[in-house]
Length: 77
Image (cartoon, rainbow, N blue to C red; front, side, top):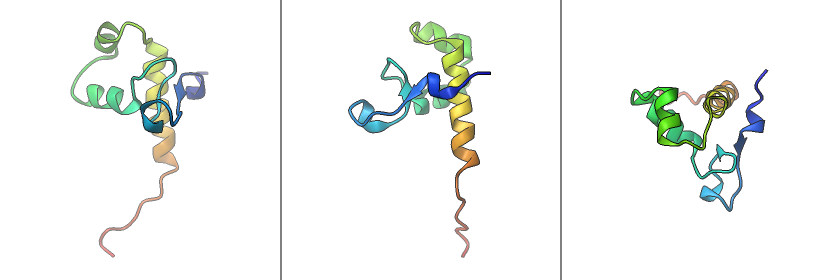
């Protein structure tokens, strides 16, 4: 089973602490935005040859974990 912690890091000295793919300055946010814009994982690997399919899967797992633990605030209140 893939563990996102093996692929994602957060260090305040790199990209101001935004989560990135380890060993890069490629943020989780960037990968998610590219996927939302229609890029495929293979497109991303071509654009950023130093990342892997497992890195992209780890980004998705990380995002799911963050959302699973997010507290929603009712804006209608």
